[in-house]
Image (tube, rainbow, N blue to C red):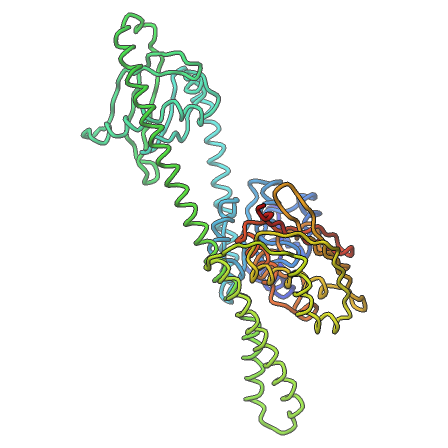
Length: 511
């Protein structure tokens, strides 16, 4: 009797979950699908260990697909996971693949039909990998029984695999340690092999300094091979020190040459390190740009879809009986347009923080904060908010325009995110530290769960819907970017239903 295929389906949308399960049941016989709607259900399913495959969306109201993937792989490294989503990006797909994702499918109308085929392919691939792993274990066991070192390296001299005797010969415990000893030699072997006519095989006697500092003579046999369209060097290395004891002069010469190679290797590593730093800076800039572009395309769609939908209704229902509804539709179109305008304005503010020069000057917070509160007076009165400043506030090095925007965003958030019928109470004070000033903004609001303390400072990361607490999701991202551009840091201390204490740290003014 064939065992039933057990699948976890993780998605916020009940309609999407139902459609996924229906398509799977049509093409996969004897299927058992379990729907996961929140984190507690996921943890229960993981503890029960009664599933063979996981299909998860990326954007979840309680988590995201990457965290789900890591949870599954942490407990069951070989369990196949498919991400089926329409809210991901190329960066997310790459990060997911690095974390062990088995397949990434964009959620489109025709993708539901192809999903069962993807499940079959992933399961077949997992079975092949399982069999290959068993074969690898058997092969490695045989290699480890040999008294000759066996290894494989690539064209750059990077070790890919070896047997136990290879490590024992070098007196190391890992490939990484062996790499540090043999990389120049392996690079040299590759260059020599590619210059030879087929069959590209070489055998030579070389001296190697082991991890404990001792020198030994070895017989190195290398062959150039093709493995999965990649050129590799397969080699054998054998200890021949017994028959090389008499060749002292050659030993001394090789020691000198080896030292020169090590010096050249260090120089190359230093150059590579500088190049890696430059590449990392470029990668970080590209990542910010991709995140920015993705945020725009994702969050501007909501108001634009509303405008398009209500406009279509107005065009297809011309009768006078729709006058009252027309007024409501027009009002919603105006609201959506204003929401899109606020999104664009906040995005421009965020973008300018990354591009403009930031001149710093001494700023007295005791003068700046009251000035900001005077500008916010209409909003404070409307919300019946009370803001208490504990004087004196310190003086910091900053940019007046950016610091004004940062404090304004913190105060407006403090009076906005409060429970219904609660009058906002805000407290502002500063603390002297060794080289920094920390400015605190404390509120009596709804609070923030600890797992979201980092997430709220990212662009468009909102914890509540726009209907409950209106906004663009960019305010705290502007706070972090602005403070970092002024050479400072930002953070929050908060718990649900216990209010929040946001802080920013900026350098002290020089005496």
